[in-house]
Length: 299
Ligand SMILES: NC(=O)C1=CN([C@@H]2O[C@H](COP(=O)(O)OP(=O)(O)OC[C@H]3O[C@@H](n4cnc5c(N)ncnc54)[C@H](OP(=O)(O)O)[C@@H]3O)[C@@H](O)[C@H]2O)C=CC1
Ligand SMILES: Cc1cn([C@H]2C[C@H](O)[C@@H](COP(=O)(O)OP(=O)(O)O[C@H]3O[C@@H](C)C(=O)[C@@H](O)[C@H]3O)O2)c(=O)[nH]c1=O
Image (cartoon, rainbow, N blue to C red):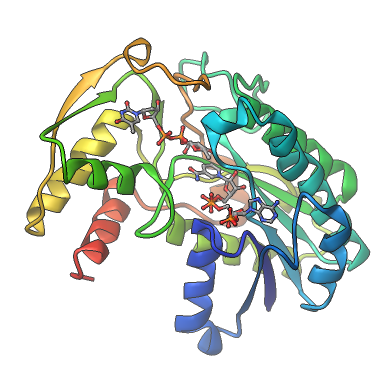
């Protein structure tokens, strides 16, 4: 199975590439990463040719404008990549007669639901990033029926830009960190997402006409946390490996003003993916332990 993945140096694409390098030969999986300048989602003219030359069996669109706060002032750029760009990738998949898996986000919801969101719950993004990703979902669905939209959340890895690495970096110079404790979500480990993407792609290729395997699915680490709990657990693990952590002071969203609004509740219910694709991710604490162990050279 040859999987072409966009967003070459991002967390998810990197995690997929690692699987390809470590176990791809034994498992018959080849990962081909694409990025700028040869594939630029803001330049839709580059998309089809770049993807076609990889001769993929399936395409994963992991490229996105992910700077949530910056998107508030760069809406046009965010929409170009996350909406039009995603549509261009899906159109290329259709032209190549292969399935496309589009990564999307918990930030398509407004966060007011008191329990975890299901796939058919009404969307209502409260940020430009969320709005642009929702428009991307719609563009993908309009471009090809042979798609899966995987909404994930709070992604972290031992590399790239993410909250866990930000906390560890800030703790190097500060004894105390103030972290919001009234936003609830599901931290998700990029290498877990990568394994799930491979399983979903294999299912799509095995059952080409199965509409039940297509459409929107939620994919997050099991369990739930606040950002403050995620920071605390990160520091607890870092200390186990001889590192240092900061003291976490829980604060409210109002006490940490940001340009973009974030949903208060962005927990996603992964039941549908488990039932139809047989994919369920480990608890976020287990995966965070693997991540931090790797950062400290213990894994
Ligand atoms: N990170 C998270 O917490 C979450 C992410 N997601 C979604 O998951 C997917 C993967 O996220 P993640 O791996 O964390 O993302 P990253 O932010 O780690 O990487 C995004 C990648 O997209 C690339 N990119 C940005 N603009 C363009 C463009 N115009 N053309 C081509 N490539 C571009 C970036 O390139 P460059 O390095 O050059 O900027 C980068 O390599 C995205 O769809 C994201 O919306 C969903 C929920 C949570
Ligand atoms: C750095 C920092 C952040 N925060 C808060 C701000 C915010 O409410 C929360 C998370 O901040 P970040 O900016 O790191 O995370 P953010 O960019 O909002 O993360 C999101 O990224 C996009 C791409 C997604 O799709 C989402 O699922 C989600 O992962 O933590 C603190 O309370 N204290 C701090 O010291």
